Length: 300
Ligand code: GUN
Image: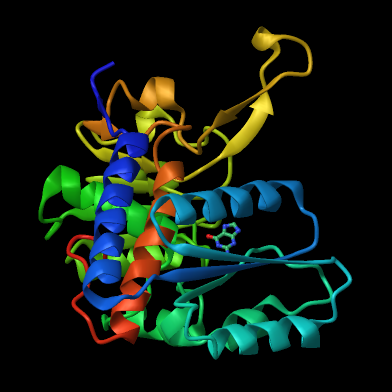
């Protein structure tokens, strides 16, 4: 292996430390405790784990956590009422509705009901528009985490060729917007892209967010490139015993790490950064709501 491993777990811990330090100052100097409200509709097991971890880490950073767990058959109007209450609650600085929501609820309607200033996921159409036009916004957590890791490794990203594989609203599109804002030359590749392998070979920065296990192999990677793997896929691992599974990314780590200059592992790369950035966004939202200086290094 030649690539440096980008340790997202360690980096996320430093982000949480910065958040916690800022929370201490907000409490002591301004008597303000940032608060994050998380709304979960239904009993999706993966979402329950995420929501539990978000609540736990929010408290560990010294902030208030408000969890609202609603039954799967909650009418859309009731979810919208709850969002409205949270929008008007001065103790709540960040609001997040965990996705996916049950089919009878229009997720866009719910996301766009969240006050843009409290939209710590950065999914509200106003924040999407602000980011797309290079203005100050709330930035989606996973791409923000990727950007922080890239800036940490490279300093300035100006002039670098970046290829983002995947065009989702949660990762691909905001990632491309952030890289463009940092003056990269950005291409978004997707399932219909022609010669995707040759395109990836031009990337100084390669971000994989397609949800296809180990799709990107070492021969797609430019020697010395920085590879950010956003994928989290469970695949069978018979070598660990019958019925066992393991987590892999969208990048084939074994071959890509022979060629890349730096690479994020799965698990332990991008994953831990997502919640850390949610905490960072909550502090940012709290500071903006109160007209206070934002913490340095925690925003785009
Ligand atoms: N479900 C999967 N990823 C996310 C995320 O980043 N935010 C929310 N709210 N739900 C998700």
